[in-house]
Length: 163
Image 1 (spheres, rainbow, N blue to C red):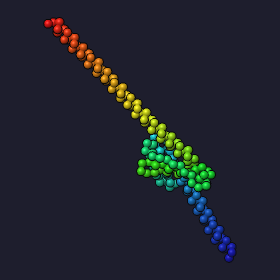
Image 2: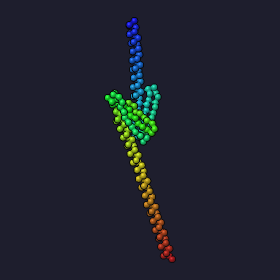
Image 3: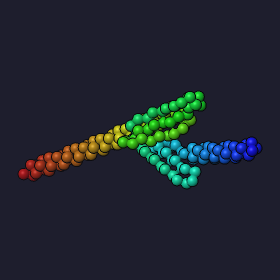
Image 4: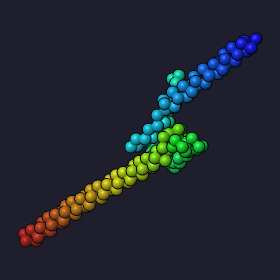
């Protein structure tokens, strides 16, 4: 009878162990399929489940209001992983379980500031070009008006000499 109890316990323990290993493998594959990407103009969070479901969140860098990196728990601090929370408009994106979350946060902030600076330079360059064009048109108009006035004055002097 004790041998039968031992067999039942071994089967239950084996089933639990097998289920735990399967669940751990599923979680690892789920984590490894997630892609967090920061480009020159946007951030992307692609969460792909092992069985095929894909959730995609994309936000332009200009719409990011704030970022925050958190390492919660002893293991997260020990192995330097955690979450990066990104406030975008009225919603929030989360880069989950990333390596070195403070570095990810700094990268996002650096690119966001770089994008904003680039847009401001572009606007300033466009304004400069607009002013250059305006002054060129002003000088061209002034020259045409002077030529017209000189022509009118010359015509008037001719008319005065003829009379």
